[in-house]
Amino acid sequence: MSLDHRLIDLLVCPLCKGPLRMGRDDQQRPVELQCPADRLAFPIRDGIPVMLESEARPLEDQTAPAPSPL
Image (tube, rainbow, N blue to C red; front, side):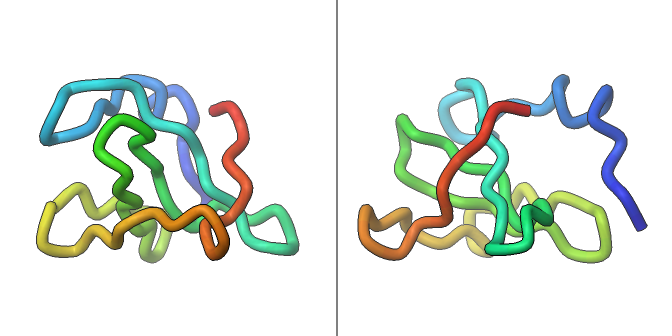
């Protein structure tokens, strides 16, 4: 299942309402949406962003996938 980037562009961080960046894996597949302000990454599962604070992981400089523009 692929992401609809038009819909992803409308999403904001559920905590601060700030913009999100796409996090990709080594093969350039979208894996998470990152909020740089809150330093959180929200997972994408089966092509669906999980925008719950309880599901987010903290962003760490060493382990965070390189963000790319939506």
